[in-house]
Structures are given as structure tokens and as C-alpha cells.
Image (cartoon, rainbow, N blue to C red; front, side):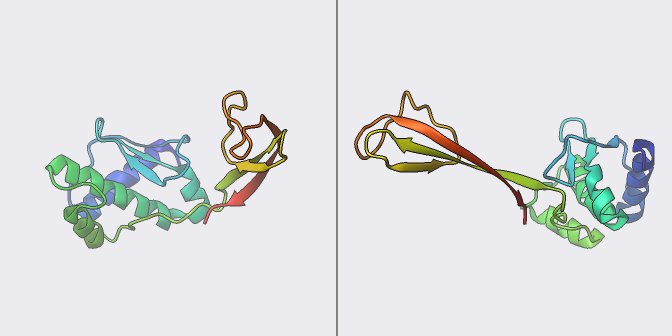
Length: 158
């Protein structure tokens, strides 16, 4: 599916489900990673994550488009367009849009564990973020710390 075909699909869904025209741009954004789509408040454009079409098919894409069009039409009308607003929840239920999109099976999260050891007392520290060993010392004996190893693993998001 091209961006032009996506634009036509969004305009068609807008007229069928909302009975209102979509007058701005809709396009695939390859930089989206954790979300199915995004409505831009400033430009009123809609970005869509192509991976959801590839992995879950057209039904998931249509659901994402309906969700983003709810944001779009409510924002333009000056009503509550945020996820927690009553107007948004009511319109989403009316058009049959999903509250959240499905998770991507290709989305994996890197998990790393850094292991530091105290040179004086031998105490091990496990951290997810790197620490400045010239600034921080052992909490038990105030000894100097050194990085022993970094373990990186791939985890599936749930």
C-alpha cells in the first residue's frame, strides 16, 4: 500500500464512519516504533506505522485509522480529543475503533545489565544504566568501583 492509497482509505473511512471529510494528510511514518498511529495537533496530519499493516493486516490498520480520526475530528471541533476524555471514549465506541492497538511480534526490547564490583570489599552491583565510576563509590566501604561485565539480552514485549 502506498501513501496515496492510505490517503484515499483514510478519506473513505472518515466519510463512512464519521460522516465528515478528512482534509489533511495521512502517510506511513517509518520512524514510529511503539505506536500504531499518531495524530499531529499542529498540522492535523496522521502518521501510521506500516508494520501493523504488514503483521496484522487490513482490519488492524482500519482500527488504527478510526482511532486517529477520533482524535482528528474531536480536536477540530474543539471537543475532548484526549484518551481520557468522555467525548473521545464515546466517539471511539460509536465508530468501533480500538482503544489500543495490538502488540507487534517483531518489537523486541533490549535488556542490559551492567555488573560493577567494589575493588575493596568485592560487593557486586547490578545496574541497568551506566554509572560514573570516578564519581560514585561502594555504599558499604566507600571503595572504588569497576565495571566487570555487560549482559545484553533480547526480550519480547508483551
